[in-house]
Length: 302
Ligand code: FAD
Image 1 (cartoon, helix red, strand yellow):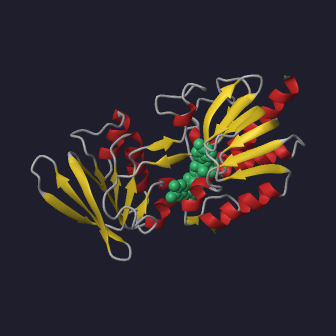
Image 2: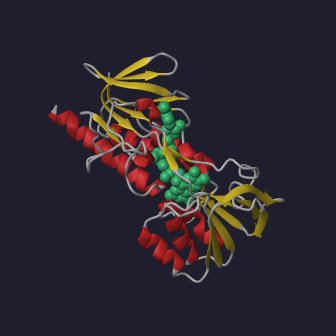
Image 3: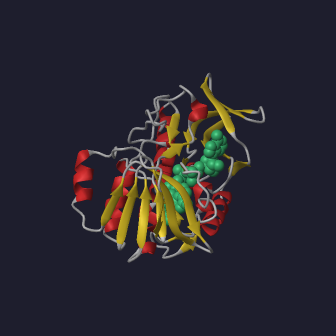
């Protein structure tokens, strides 16, 4: 059996594997797609101490760093079941069952897409998902935020301080965000809120140049010209396969304590799949290190 088995090969998993392997314990990592969300990222400007890098380059460095150590890397493998018996058992989709004394879950998350024409085409060409990451790219420009929940309204307030103008598009008749956020939003001079509207299409040629939406009460189709759209309709953790094995929030996020421990002894979690409030590369790496140290601490006590 492994001492530490990491599930997920994004920033959190890579960091956890390196921290575990550096303790000289038997470490494995199972990853469906090494690099995780970083593989979908173009420019990265907030990975501190590196002024600019690109997703695939950072993903390759993550893998290279993991391979510096004695880590059993199992790529292109998807975990489908976790259960605690004598050891913690991880069943893969190919039928193999791996056993380990501790497991670190770092399966990440994915942004929910609106699913309209132009969304795929203009990803990273005006269509963005992370205001902390890409907000500064739109300084002085006009943008829209799709989604009027807490994350959408937080994004709109954040962006209003950077960009020229923000239009919020909400499908329902009312915003769902907390009252304090709405008050703050409506106090800003450069924000327009459109409620009861359905996003129909992201338009553009080589890059995004606008959004078409439908007013749901009148059926009228409208178009706004802008340079950026931030989609904020939810971040979905990749945790469904866990079922009730560990405690998860209503949103599916794995609940962890400050040692990265989950509700199941010996099972730890890190990164975007957990209930940590902010989801970023540097934060995921920190929490991966934290969970690996938590797992090591657990091993020397049990
Ligand atoms: P992920 O990166 O999501 O990695 C999850 C890993 O788990 C992957 O290897 C995946 O294949 C694997 N996995 C999932 N399910 C299973 C399973 N059942 N079995 C086995 N493996 C599984 N953050 C920044 O700090 N700066 C940025 O500029 C930035 N830009 C971004 C741009 C885009 C387009 C996106 C989508 C995200 C961006 N982020 C950025 C956010 C950042 O990428 C994430 O916070 C970070 O990657 C989370 O790391 P993670 O290791 O927790 O999860």
